[in-house]
Image (cartoon, rainbow, N blue to C red; front, side, top):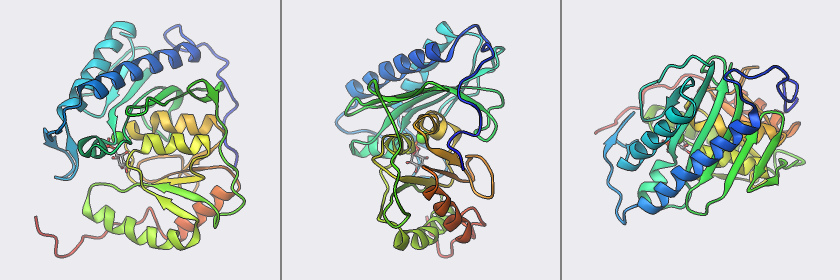
Length: 295
Ligand code: IPD
Ligand code: CA
């Protein structure tokens, strides 16, 4: 498994008369401006404005305000690009580029005041599908500590300007593995079963609550491996590019690319052992109903 299935860099001109370096700079400035809004505007007690997939999947007024800010800025700066955001309707475009926005990744942490939440901004070319798009640039801005990870296709990944390389664990048994869980009980029940297969085989597990930050921690070697089922495109768009540009293999199971079915990341060859273990555990298999669930 190679960290990069395609050659580094894009040789052909990008649609919309731009380059990946400018897109990276724009992603960074958008994410940092949005991050300041989240940081400065967080009330002492955060109210949940609504819920989404079920009643433990929260949306706050801040999620919506941040996405509106990002959309306003993009409409002014890149009016021909499309937008896919977690909290709004899809905005079509004509340039062939799509901005993929997660206004707050780690909303549960934001609600509770746990310090791991981020603004994630990425721009992709091609179909709006993580298995098929070409991610061009992205930024994940961790709101509480201000750490900012960026990547541009073919130009590497950085944390606050410092170039990143993934760790090279010598075995699965000595790997620190990040993961996360969905909001829906059936998915969680299955994820718990898979976790029971993974946990005895690795150094330890971390569930930090923001997939975007997890992927960036992987990029800098603070996690050795990462896997999660059920990510949305906006959860992984920027973080997966940061990880890949830091040398990670990022993919799915059974030869697939990263997707909502499964996203796995880490340095070869040990990531292959994790992929094999997840395949053996049927980690992307059926999610049977959970009996005895009451309200
Ligand atoms: C969630 C976080 C979490 C992951 C969930 C995501 P949200 O995003 O990334 O770490 O485990 O799958 O849905 O809801 O906080 O934007
Ligand atoms: Ca998210």
